[in-house]
Length: 223
Image 1 (cartoon, helix red, strand yellow):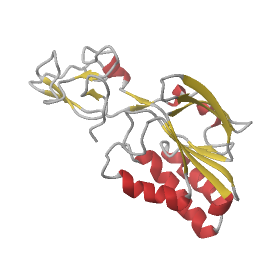
Image 2 (image 1 turned 135 degrees about the horizontal axis):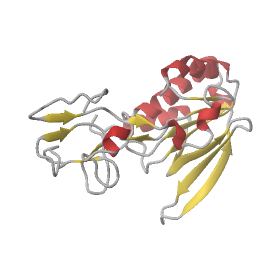
Image 3 (image 1 turned 180 degrees about the vertical axis):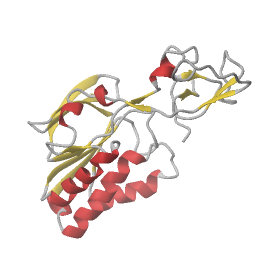
């Protein structure tokens, strides 16, 4: 069914609309995007503000976040961080800046072959890695960010930290039309066989991308 209630007949259906960026998934984020030192390149119109913050920073604390999987391109959250650090190194501000990556995951990058090369950049730029930290709320006027820290034993703690600038990666979900359709499983992802990408109940339906539930325990983006 298309917009305007127009139906399209098909023999096979391949579903790959991509993930939905959930700006409202972090308390206070929408209210302060594009000001108070808070930016996100997941809104293309904020890219100039990101560069304005990077060029204008004269030391202090710069935070970068990485949302829980699934997200669009697992490496994308770290790219602004490395580029910013390189700019600060060239203008002499890196030595005056505390750079921290708050990663909701347990490792720097999920593909082991790439992790060592990325760790070299982390060491070169002196980046402080914080794993198991999920951004929960932002207080823009106070420039404070609150994270939920998942400890190794599974317990959770609230961690609040200040920032001079912060680049936020918002949480991402399957589109509403998927979550509200017969395609979705109980968690809202397209319920496919991970070996064939064919829907477990609707044999004429296939799914590609981060919203396809390809593992019994996790939802893993395919690209």
